[in-house]
Image (cartoon, rainbow, N blue to C red):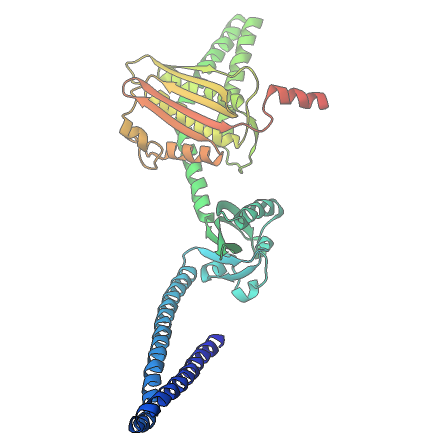
Amino acid sequence: MRKAKEIALKVALAYVLLGILWVILSDYFSVILAHEKLSLYIYFQRFKGWFFIFVTGVILYLLVYRRTRDVLHSNDQLKKKERELYIQNEQYHSLFKHNPDGVLELDLKGKIMALNPEAEALLESSQKELEDIQLRNFLKEEDIKVVTGHFIDTLSGKGSMFETNIHLAEEKAKILRCSFIPIIVSGEVTGVFAIARDITQFRKNEEMMIVSEKMSVIGQLAAAVAHEIRNPLTSLKGFIQLMQTTGSVNRDHLDIMLSEVDRIDLISGEMLILGKQQDLHYQIVNVDSILQQVIVLMKAQANIDNVSIDYKPYLIEPLRVEAEANQLKQVFINIIKNAVEAIPADRRGRVSISLNRKDGDAIIIVSDNGTGMDPERIEKVGEPFYSTKEKGTGLGLAICKKIIEKHKGKIVFHSEKQKGTVVEICLPLIKGNSLRETAGRERKS
């Protein structure tokens, strides 16, 4: 409105100024002409009004044309921008509404402002039911702190990805893989987009694969364990028969018999623990202890295949990690079993295992003197359904890799053809895993 007034004022001023200028100039020339020739003065007076109309008309036309052209050009540009904005809005609406993931728009306090149909299905509630509801209402106390941390990070202008559990009516729970993305308008964060995908079934399938592979490994170990147990059983039978024949008891024989029974109990106990279906509970465990237990089982197969297993522990201090012990056992059994099977029958086999510490990580290295692998095969190791074995599925190492990743560690393979393979596993140690800090805690207690 102000702009229109300015334009009208300019046109009016231009007209008035031209009129004043014309009156002054025309009167001046009239006076000059009156002294020289009366007829010329009369002629000028007759047509000066028409001349003024013509001149002002041309000037007004040019002014109005120029201004109208600018207005029309601005109007065309505005329509073009509106069209682009409409297309972008439709694209955004399509991305929001038809996204296969759940999308929620949150304000700066975490309240749900809008959500797409997939998010409604995910939360099993309509948009009307979720108005002004905070996202934290679907989280338990232990998850609220983690999700709030990611939310605060996002408000600073950077996105984040994480996994969390949500809890719905009737004690129903879902596992979500989420992303928080800042909504930035004019350089300021005005809210957060939460993108979520239900991975509950994916996690169940993953756990089923791990259990299935574990049972497969146990089945393969059973024959070797049975062979290993047969040896102490033969010794026990021989000593018992000797006692029946002589009718006397030899204390040395009894000690040997007890040690053989302990050996059978240890091997069978490890098999039972490994085979038992258990809930996942991450606890602080000693890596050396787990390796020792696995080696007891694996020596049975190694003896059958004429392979020696050498273990070099870390003796300076216990190396403790937060882990699910059964899953770590599964990883170590798979790696050592692969190492034993990679050694040809005509070669004196040797599998070396070492435990060390480096930069806050427990480092487990398993090396063998087997056939090794080509570089192109090394790149594919750990991919599901890729195996170098004739009857292998490739799931074993894929599951090992997944388990180590879930424990926030990493697994690396190095190999050279006909020289052997080295597998390096890194697991983050718990905070305070050092002799100095341990001694400090003991002094406090």
